[in-house]
Length: 369
Image (cartoon, rainbow, N blue to C red; front, side, top):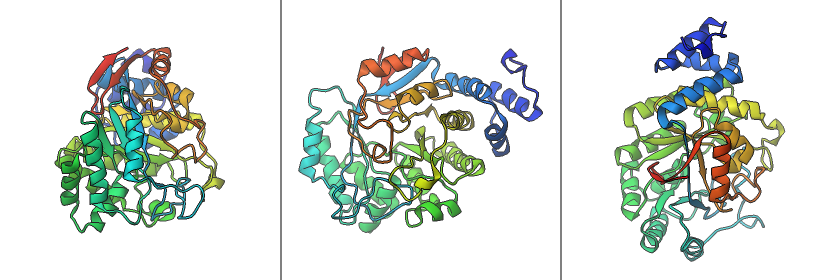
């Protein structure tokens, strides 16, 4: 066996290391053992093996920007710092014209993707949002439009009286290219009742993504960790994603999202440590053996932690963002004005010993730096 694993005395961990080295899938019990007993150096080594299998010495980023049309929302999840009711001085709602003005600020800039997510506004249906997509598509045809979490999709499709398949086909015709991974939170039904009781169920989230994949619409997946869940809940979440990916192969990447404590109903919980962040990245990379990419969303955990995650299985640093998201800054993120230029993001990747590659939204290389 690889000399890197000679020091392992625990029989269970040694078996897992052998499986990872031999490209064999680990089971939920073994994933739980990794969370509970594996030390960080071992997790980093194993996650690195899996990462290199997919992406070698490369780490990816893209030129993107976010549009958050509104933070008014029919839901009021206990972990959310973003939702504000009508009339609150911190609430906002952009018109189509205002959103197009945001798009136009990126004229003559090398952005390749717009990421559109926000609150689930009570008044607007699938054609309101679809016509927005079409306006963006007509104005800048080359821009990849990644829009609407499964939670937003559920509401707008239901409001229009469509099936999931019908609704996704409508949005695809309007110009939707892919969907982000938000709204997954944690799949365990009991925990979901505690933290986001009224939003779409885990089963519905998975069904929406599966249907999208079958229609040729790729997507991402997320988990919200570091709140009231335990390691068993995280493994259950990863297992459900892995099963769906086996069926569809439609997920591009997995993005762990850390619970942030500021300005929400769960603030009393505090936040998990950076050690726990790295453990979660590593186990996710090892367990999701059919996901090509693991992303560190740096506006959430900070640039330095995202850089460190590149040594724990992460291969994607997201993008330049250009100070266009408030979701995590409102929850107390270290990155109050999230923006990185190409040189900064490349430097972080190179310092971690990897080769930065600019990508498009589907991980086709645009330029190696």
